[in-house]
Structure formats: structure tokens, C-alpha cells
Length: 308
Image (cartoon, rainbow, N blue to C red):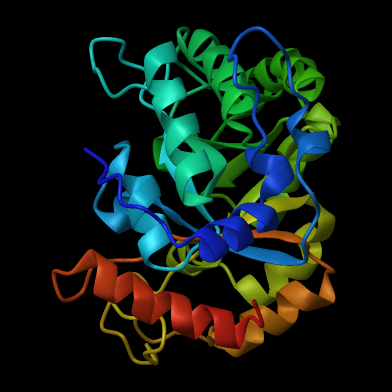
């Protein structure tokens, strides 16, 4: 359970003001629709972390941990199994998260949904529920994972994914929500989906470490994808963000690291596409202490990416 410590009033007001519009969620969830896109102010860059990086996967305590490490937000896992009491499909869980966000001045910036939309019929129901949940929590991005077996590999699979997204996109748009597709395909293959759907509520959730892992060059892909990117994952594998991973002995990337995969170069590439949004840490716990390790990573990212 969250420790309901009394927060310093000035600190709380400052943190709440930073995300005031995003946190000014309806105190009566379900009674009033909020357009999340209109509800939140626009800042150049803001910093969050995945709940799993805080060792609180889909748990309410992730909100408090995000506050403790100095983040602006947290990205939550959307569990679609209703038998799981922590699932955000439960209205009571949504209310608990809303209250925790108000207490700690933290915004839920995105939901992570692992639905296999190319093949799983129930995925439509899960994604529709995630739209309602995102609306209630003030998040304006829903990550849809199209990774490995979830990424289309045939023309028929591309048609299926595009058709599903065409149906879902207007529903997301009505609530001010954007689907961010996290893909294991190339930039060109990702654009095939984006152009096929042709809707402003379907964009790319770009993970430059994953891109490198799957054999692509982030510094070439970021300019290609440009304003189709709605959010970034930021990570450094099993290393601190401040560590130079050149020469990392990984079977998929050994020998071709990383022309340009240093974080200052990535930060410059992001700046050149005029990106304004969230950077979400998907970092590892190195020492066994998720708080200390995330503080270390947050400090580095704030300096390198110029987030203050």
C-alpha cells in the first residue's frame, strides 16, 4: 500500500502545477468525459518510467516510486485479465490510481497494452477498454506492442492490422487518445502501417535500443519517422544510462554497435525532429535497488536531454 506521508506543501504544489491540467481528472470517473489531448499542457520534454522499471509492474506503488525518484510521470501496464485484481479494467483500480496521482503530483502518461491485434479476436475488446481507462486517468498515449510475432510479416497480416486500427482510431480520437505502435519492423515497414491507416490517432512509439537490437540504425530511422513518433522508450539494456555500451557482447548487436548510438547523438536527433512529448525510461535494475538505480538514470537523462 502507498505510504500516505504528508508531502511538503510547496513541493506538492510545484509538482502538481507542472502537470496540473493532466492531473485535473474528473473526481467522478465515468460521469464526465475528458478529452485528454485538451486536458494536458504541452511541454517540450517530460520524463517518466515504465512501472516495471520501478519494480512495481501494474501496481499502485509505482506512482509513489515515480515521485520518489523525481519523475514527472509513470507508464502503466494495462492488464486485461479481469481475474487479476490489479487490472486497470476495474473501475476501483482506476479511482485508486487517480487519487494516488493527485496526492503525489504524478501523471500517468501512457498505458502499455500487449494485445496481438493481428491475430487475437479479443484484442478489440481489450483495446476499447484501454481507451476508456486512458481517458479516466488522463493518459493520452496507448502503447500497442507489435513486436516479433505480433508484427505483420505477410500482406494479409498487414491488411488485418491496418483494418483493425482503422476501426479503433476514431474511437481513440474521440477521447483525445493516440495509439503508439511499438514495432520490431524497419522504419519503412512501420510507415506502411501508418500510411495504410492514415489517421492522426495512430502513430509510432519508438524504442531506439530495440531498433538497434532488431538490426536498424536509430539515427537514420528517427528522421524518417519524424512527427509520426508520439513517444520514446529510453534505455541502455542491462547497463546504467550513463555507461558507454560500445563493444557490448550481445549476439544480436556485437560488432555493429553503435554508430551513433550514444545518448547525446540520440538527444540531438530527437531535437532535430522538433519532438515535444514524453521520454519513458524502460531501464533495468542493476544493483537490486530500483529507487537508487532510477535516480541515477533520471539524473543522466535530464542532463543529456536537457529536461529541467
